[in-house]
Length: 262
Image (tube, rainbow, N blue to C red; front, side):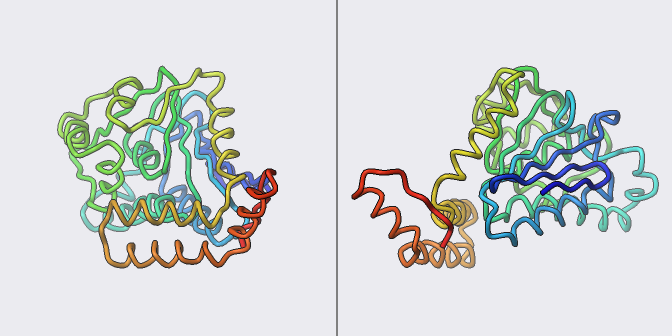
């Protein structure tokens, strides 16, 4: 399966989705239409039972420079227009955050603003040594809404979130790694291969188990009653699944399990 949306490229193969921000001439800046398309694409993938993982990346040298500032005079010029615009990018963050499958950001070059938000919304993040990170809202005179700040605080920690948003400073990959924002730093030539390898490691495991783990981790982070309830329900479901029976059988028979998500 392959799908091209203006500014985005989506491919699905062997249960792994690869979503690429594809505006290299604009440093993969994301316009209003692309925010909506990211949200709808990931939401559609979330309805597919055979998707095991998603890799998010940028085409060319950069992950993403963030929102396309050139259109702000039309789509984000005041509080009224900003409300609709911010819903579009918050929906994109939420689609990644709420996806039942794990999401992996493969980051090179610039990862700024809304691009940083997309990466933060993913479950795992890897980057090349030359990647740089910035949340430049204070330099533009605008504020990120709480819905867009959730993932930044969760992924980078409250103190680093404060530093990034208060100062609009750039940090490099080693500092992002030290803050816990990155899982690991990989050689530039190995970024996509490493992201795909992690996705493949996930894909061979029991999808119901992975989904339950993602839900449980979310419940720990949010503490919300509805998240706790959802995590418990998904956890209980694994014990009645055919995959659990297959896992036990494979252990007894000393072979690799073959999971199909039922």
